[in-house]
Image 1 (cartoon, rainbow, N blue to C red):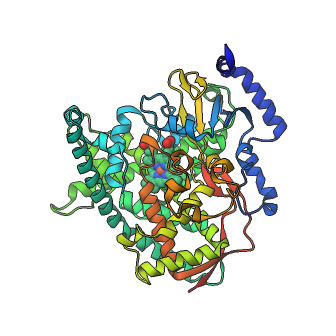
Image 2 (tube, rainbow, N blue to C red; image 1 turned 180 degrees about the horizontal axis):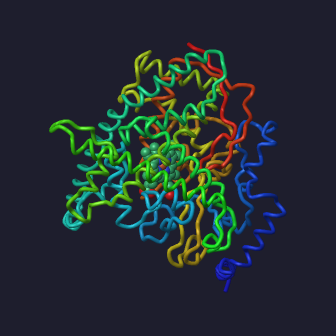
Image 3 (tube, helix red, strand yellow; image 1 turned 120 degrees about the vertical axis):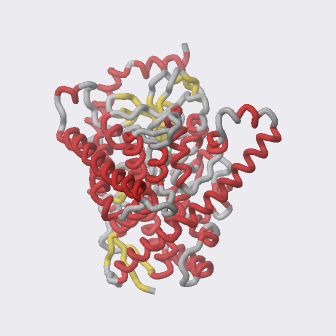
Length: 526
Ligand code: HEM
């Protein structure tokens, strides 16, 4: 039968594994090992050591770079082999779809874009791409009407021409969206930096600062409302995300929640209802604005406006429901804010330690804008800042897990995977693999990216994928990196910063990879 057959049988005896893993967990300590690391934090160097990854969960090493761990009540394969990752994420036969959201994940995302599949996903992705500065090859295919596709593909020339035309349209569209978002981002950075002025020479906690900032940006650009209006939703979503993160790996017998609900389950249900109610109010307000709007005036084509238009679309195949609108609003709040906050906070942290790179980045910013505000043209040319952001995304990858399931029995490399097996792709582990990045993998060296991502990864696209890859690549990738570049440029123009002696290094997994005790820096006006 061979190793492959034995492996398949091994996986199917899931109940047996449940007890094995429970025992390992008992022997190794709690499932919150990474959370418990704070006690050792003071003695730890300022990095993320490779051995932190396996410690996230008790696991069994299966073969090569494949591990087995337990997710809730299901076994999960943790894959840290780039070749296999590429195969999974680029698969186009629906062999590795997203797992249907259940329990806490369902309450958090509903059936929104990150968890939906099939036609619904295509429809929602188109809507999201419509309002964010994006560029992804998948859009080429999905943007032509299905009835036109056979005609366009009938000749290689007409297909190539259609793709070029579409790419040009995307380029113009992306540039327009970037130009649209810049004034909003600049205003919010200015407000944040105005607060910072009064902290000259004092300590400031930047994770919280960036949380407020990114919340405001996503509110304004996606919903046209202010952060204050959305504050309640944010607080509830953050609480729900935190409960989801802590409960993700907790073992409960299937169906037990129907008989007995934990405090977290009760609280998460209430949060879900509260979030839905608040989002419905924002939608209602906007709907009233739209109906009473004077002819010719517009609140722009922000995401909410695009969702509302789709909700009222006369064509049933394009129409979306009220629940779809709520789910997508939640997605934008959660996916758009938490990840970008993490990126900004760890980048400032790294620059606060590596003041030589802080100086280099400042020099570049001053060369491009002087004391002027960032402009679309210069933003795309900030090479040093892009290298720094990439290195920050490599060392402190915000999204720790990319989850898929095996739809039907499939061959992956040398393995035959049984249907319904969960796959956990771990970008952080790949980004910290010394075999890919060299022995200095844990060091902050933005120069790795001086000749682009392809060169840094030896053309191995699956060696660096902080935004995922393939059809499900992040729709907010350009939005997030542009937002980060604008904020960092404006900070560098006005302040020098160093790490405060009170800072305790303790990165934890709580939905994203975040600093458990915040990041304290000392500000010096320039
Ligand atoms: C530094 C910032 C960000 C990081 C690191 C990040 C990371 C990711 C990753 C890894 C995925 C792929 C998940 C998968 O394949 O299962 C993803 C998907 C997604 N992201 Fe982001 N993201 C960021 C910012 C944003 C922003 C600003 C938005 C929205 C405004 C956003 C919206 C989404 C959505 C809707 C998806 C689902 C796409 C799909 O399933 O087709 N993200 N993101």
